[in-house]
Image (cartoon, rainbow, N blue to C red):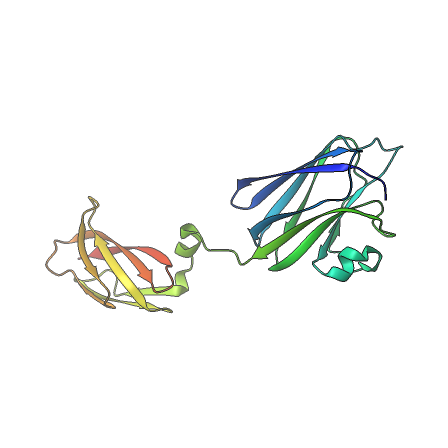
Length: 210
């Protein structure tokens, strides 16, 4: 196997993106690195630099489920999920991981009759819901009646750990863990409920008291 050096630099760009920089130098041997864990839906972009020109030596990226038979005998890796075109000189290539599991990105000499040069191993975990995502899950929580005369109830899939009621100035007027909430002592107007369940999920709802 031809000797060379691949230097990996891993950086996170945003919630759903990860960047990996690769620098090529024909001086050392095969290396591997681990990236992640990343959440499902993350796009991994590999920026590569200083690879040989196209008419000198051609390389490819190949994405496979992590399996030792694929990695140590890459010619058996027919379950490829994605692969790039020829990479040479400088450029970038992206692939998105939408399912949980363990994966490997191989850097190979040929994508079909594979000669393996290096690998990047990734673990993909379940995507965590951001607060904005949770707020959109309307069916997960119900508040009724709303508008209310001051007494209302909440229904959630999970157990409620705390409900906070705030007025329009942001002042917290009530904290409770009960599904039944009573703000009859408060003046009519608009209030805001922040509801947290036992799994740590949070919802925000507007309450109208008449």
